[in-house]
Image 1: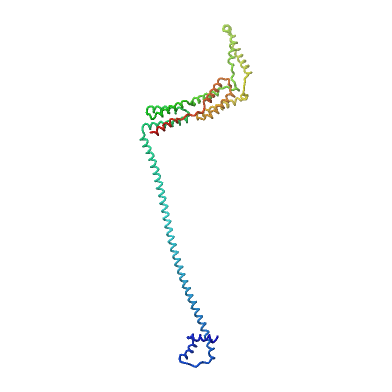
Image 2: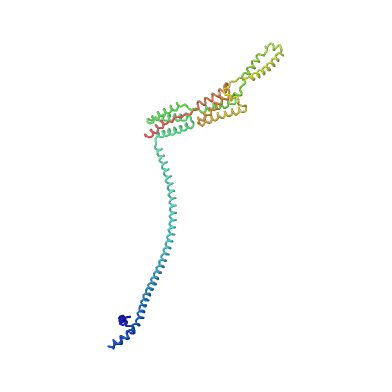
Length: 392
């Protein structure tokens, strides 16, 4: 250390013993100068004091920092605790609000269900009220109608029902009866506004009468007669023995003796009777040995006797099916069954026999008359009634 550095230290550091001892002569007065060899000895004693001061300053700074950090830590801990308490409080508040919200939601659901039930009940009552209102309005309209309007409405309803009945039954009688009844009612009314309706009624009545309607009952009767005659019809495989009775009568007439001779000779009468019986039997057997028949379909002769019964029953079923089809207004099905029955009659039965001809004629008549006919509707009359009702 140089002497320059030590001089300020000795001067400034008044607390040290060296400084106090050096200052005392100055205060008392002028003193003699110390020898120069003592000045370098004061420099080493100032070094521990500086280090101590620096250490003390550092300790003070560290202590201040420690206190500040401790203070900050305590403040932060208190702040965290307060935040935790606030969070707990808010969580408790949130739970309470959630429970309250659930209770309110349940109440709202119950109220909504009750409101829906009330709305449904109100809708039902409104619908019932609307229905009653419409019925009341209709009743008022019916009461407010005049006698002419009521009659026109009744005629319209009767004609519509009669048209449906005619379409179902296939007969024009219900429609004709309804048209005649309507014409009679309008004639008794004698109002100018219904003259157009009366003219339309007359035209529709003429148009319905002009249609040839199928008479279903008569056709079914003919089919029943044909079915009953099937068992008695002769087949080509089993023809009738025609001419046997005629031949027996001829032999009897040729072999019968004169009455006078029979009275004179009784044995001759007995012999004549025996001869007649024997000759008749022999002649019948001889005629049965040879038979000439013209057959267009050879398979008709090949029908076995036990199959003839099935053939007749199948023919009966065909005719009965045609009868059911006529009753149900299925004319196409009836025509098909009638064609099959006619083909069976022509193929397997003897058409030269009178009974076969009659049965074939019945089947042909039914097939000719069983046609699908469309009955006219009274559209003109209904339009005239609607126009008369609209022009009231």
